[in-house]
Image 1 (cartoon, one colour):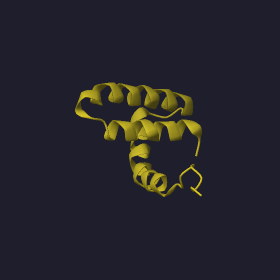
Image 2 (cartoon, one colour; image 1 turned 180 degrees about the vertical axis):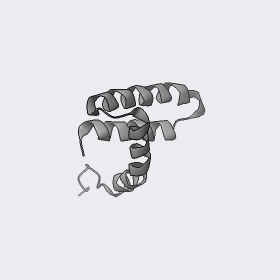
Image 3 (cartoon, helix red, strand yellow; image 1 turned 180 degrees about the horizontal axis):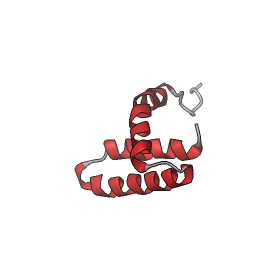
Image 4 (cartoon, helix red, strand yellow; image 1 turned 90 degrees about the vertical axis):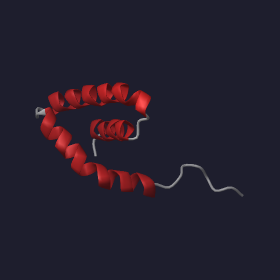
Amino acid sequence: MSHSLEALLEAYDALRSAPAGEINARQANYEASLQEVATHLGIACTLLHQMIQRKYPSWLRAQKRKPSSMPPSA
């Protein structure tokens, strides 16, 4: 997966998990990132957003399966 799509999924995840006081800031961040990536890819923002929404559940499951970068304690 490209770095820009990974970053977009992370921004979407941050938006979905935002506390009430941070929703507007995270929404603005996600929309700005969405616009930037959509322009770079040459597709509509709505289409890219739909793609992110479809990919999000499997991305989230994969994030939960990632092993910790911390080495096991001795």
